[in-house]
Image 1: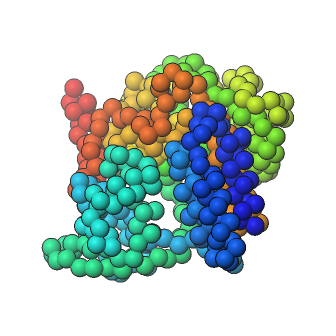
Image 2 (image 1 turned 45 degrees about the horizontal axis):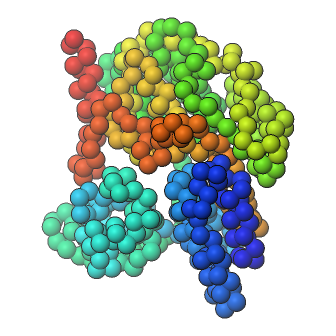
Image 3 (image 1 turned 180 degrees about the vertical axis):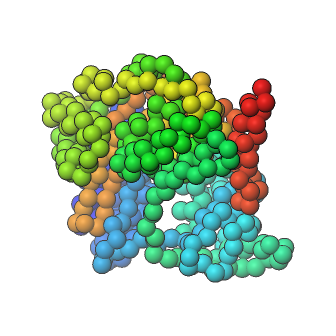
Length: 428
């Protein structure tokens, strides 16, 4: 079973993935095929081990939009450490702790893992970390491979702690608006996956937003979704003028219309149409479905979205007159798109760290096997890649860069800086 599935994954990555032409020859499937064959013959391969092998194979494509994972079932569950870390200089700092963990605390400093220092581990796991920049490195997957760590607690005492793994918890989105001070609102959106929920939030607070002087939007953690989810927010983001989103775009997007991509995407679009009530999202999905139908099997095609032009034209507003967007590397996909688009408004200042930058290749298809595994991979490609303006590994850069430090764990440094900027602008 595993050998057959892996061969199909290789076929997808070499023929259906939208980066297949740009990255031809980057992968080395034969090394993994021989390993899988040997493990299967010895009955030594289980779902968890197979996922590790596939993930290692996929690293060579250098695309954070590609994901392979276990679906929680009776045959296999996903496990991980119950805390998150971030690197600063030569140490890892615990940034959050889940419900299960009692052995570590937020803010503690990990100095080694299995007696290996963090700088040495960084060299060992250079491929897995996906960035040479410590601020952008993903250490959480690396930690899952080890047994224990040595850390320094808040009293300065060294102690050794086992790296226990727990069943992965379900993600719960956050869509909130709160008043910070007089005529200043803070909006937090952790994904753009639910256009109705976000539109309802904005409609419920429409009067507050329209009467606010300042609006802060926190997308430091944003898991992406659909760009249509933030359309209802854009009239507040842009200046008091007529905006045409088609004019704001500098890039052409090409859809890789292979037969497999067509089948997977059409199924996904039809399911979304059945579940969606938001009129803008429905119109967008219908046009997208029609374009896939028209171009099945034709390779890379630039879709015609002219029927959506009316949805892309709207009027901006005078208030809020100052908007600050908080960003970080954990903001990607539609989060990238949102930040990049908002930077075109003169009302907006983006502060924090560069976003994930995963949209050179996007519009994900999902292939599933035996209700046990699923592969998420991009089906579209931006022409910006050829022009040397790709965002992979770089992200959308903020207007005001604030380096991440351990102080961020105990204080909201970004929010404080945002409030300072607003105070200065109100004085002037």
